[in-house]
Amino acid sequence: MSILGKNEYERNILHHMLSEILKASTNDIFNDIYKSYKLEYDFIKNYSIIVGSDDELGSNFHTNILSELNSKKFYDFDGTEIIVEHPLSSYKNVLYLTDREEVKIKIGSSAFIDSNSIGMFRKFYNKDIINNFIEFKLTHNIDMNYLPYILEDYINPHHSRPNPKVTVEKIKAFEIVNNLDYELYKQTKEKRVNEKLLKLNGLKNIDEYINNRIFWFTHFFDKGYNKYNILDLPGSSAVMFSSEEKFPIYSLLSQYYIIFGYLLKILIEKNKRTSTKDKIKNVYHQMILNGLIFEQVLTFAYDYFEDVEESKTFFIFDKSWSYEKIIKEYMNNAWDIYLYYTAEQAISINKQGVDNQKIDFTLSFFLTMDNNFYSAYIKKNRRKMFVINESISGRPYVSIAEPSDTTDNINLLVNEYLNENNIIDRLKFKRSKLYNKHSYSMAIIFKEQMQRELKIELFE
Image 1 (spheres, rainbow, N blue to C red):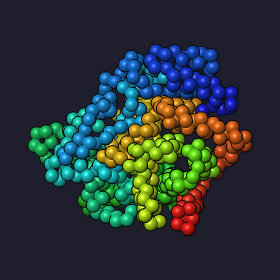
Image 2 (tube, helix red, strand yellow):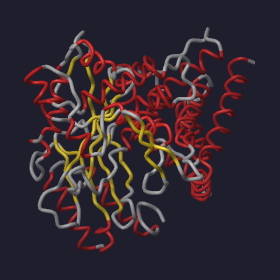
Image 3 (tube, rainbow, N blue to C red):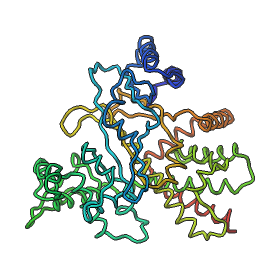
């Protein structure tokens, strides 16, 4: 079953409703459109919609601390800007349209730290060097998440110079700052983890907490489905698997390999003497074949094919580069996109918060100091809407981009391509189903295919 509609009739109705919402500009109109469709079509009750809006009525988002985090400027001690954005960052307000009878919508938040930003926490912990972002985080108890950093620096099988000892030191400094006993720090300037939090989680000390986190990040297992035992050791504990199966960690990297393959495909197309229209259609066709369509990558590709300056400061290519140099550079670019995409998906529609209160949705902020990546990719991929299917377990959703000349042009080209290929819908369905079943093997095969094609096109 599709996330958006059980059949073509429902999908068409949803398409018309969402198109009307995209064209509207005030919260009253957003609400009126949603209510009118809900009254006329009962199945609309199965959908909730998160909408970015510049209207300050009907939602308290623009008055809370998340809005301030979204709009405030942050700088590191050396003046480098700290960019903190969430998928709806270009809007002042966030409106939540739902059939559920809620008096007040509860929004959670988490800020995801990439590898070039985590060092500021270590500097604060070791050298007491503070910036206005850390001050803001401590004052308002902003939740932080270093999943992007741990994926790139610790899990990454392609890391050229891994240093697990330094990684663990950075994680420990981060966790202490993230869970700082702030009252003690204000009184004494001592940086110590909040002991109450450790006890609430059944942990004895920060080292035990770090060991537990490292183990989880290494194996990515779900404690609800896998058996495990806690082995008490002098001064700390270790978590030991007792189940026969472990979650295959590298399957999580399938999207990374797919993105890497798409970047190589974009470079191959760039060096062909064809129009932007043909290049976009070729990239889109490749996405269909792989069962994973990345609209954000298509947006970036369009700007790159059109020689938009920002895209070339991130997606650098020099004809003098060796094949190995290209692979290394584009693997790094693929990591940036993959980690941002992973964090963006963490808008995941949560059921429970840490205080056991229900959270309707979580806005995932992404923190980076890489201005080239921000300008070329993040800034160009604003979201306007998240559409949640409440009738499916897990509340899956799709996101819809903020309308722009680029997205309009891409939509025209994609629709033209689909009209030219009458059987493409069946192929899309089959390939998507195949990817869901064999994501890792398909990703590896595609990555290697693109690497071979790159060699042929540029070096033979």
